[in-house]
Amino acid sequence: MGSGGLSRRRFTGTLAGSAVGVTLPATTACDDAPAPADTADRAAEATTPESRPSAQTEGREPSGPHPLYLGTYTSAEGGGKGIGYATYDAMTGRITDGGVLAETGDPSFLAPHPNGRTLYTVNEREDGGVTAVRLADRKVLGTRSSGGAGPCHLSVHPSGRWLLSANYNSGSVSVHPIAASGALREHTDVIRHSSPPPGPDPERQDGPHAHQIVTSPDGGHVLAVDLGTDTVYTYRLDQAKGTLTEVSRARSRPGAGPRHLTFHPGGRYAYLANELDNTVTVCAYDPATGRVTIGDPQPTGTGDVTSYPSQILVTADGRFAYFANRGHNSLTRYAIEGKGARLRFLDTVPVHGDWPRHTAFSPDGRLLFVANQRSSSVTVFHVDRGNGELRLAGEPFASPVAVCALPL
View 1: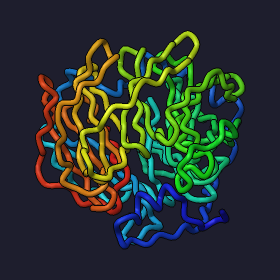
View 2: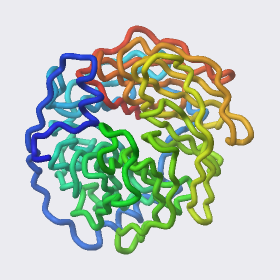
View 3: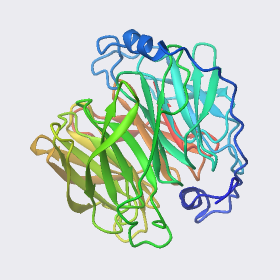
């Protein structure tokens, strides 16, 4: 598929059941001079485990406005102009519009650097890119090629030295060094998922489709979830060279279409959202070998409604999980039992929007944000710390083609 082609992933999320049209113009990379060779090392020194902020800061008293960064498709009809910016009240959940953080093409997924100074986004286009934005002055530090087509997910390695990204259209994963300034250098590795063969769905599994890449809680392995090959790949990252070596792979049942994996805080179990067969599976994880063992599929509570799971969140205390259902337009609540080994269905709650594409907790875990793609809105819920129940925090916030909502 040439530049400007429409990915199957975006077709499903943007057009199915709607009249929104999409085009994909070519990305123009921002200028960024190569960083000195020692900058990645200095970035690691500046971001020690002790200095990194926690993703979930339990017990912190929220005060004042907090930043909320919003991903969109700039090339979709009604889409945004780049990465959106807003603030939210950490007690009430009320969102206030703040305009545009930075103009960049199709920033559909966002991830912060552990030191909180830089925000990274994919540029989900056929000539895929990854872009760095300095938050202090909203300066775009540059765009690098993702080494593939249609990048849809990225994450920063806990060391702060490497950006990991997943290219959906080309079914590949890539590694970029991060300079001390937060800027990205050229990729040091790109691996395409050439085996096993794709799954049985002729429309969505016409080839490998890498959908997510994350680091395990122990920091020892990098895991990539591929919807096209029904596989979770485990890699080791060489932190001297920035290269990935496969050490294990786990196959889901044919046609499951795994999309998103989230670890339990205990580090021994993870939960896999399967987009194509509308199920969730509990996975065992061995930190010593990186091996993932995928369990039996479980229902999502959506009944006979055609639905496509997008993501699963786990509370910082490891007691509850929330599963986003596109189509059913709900969040499923599970109780987590057996130190992470079991999910027990509790209920579903409507998201008060259409097509919940992305979910995220506020840093203190008191609020849950839902980006609703088709209704161009962000819904906020209060999270009950005792029983995990969700309570709507006011009316949804209007955000053009909202595909990612990242509260910090």
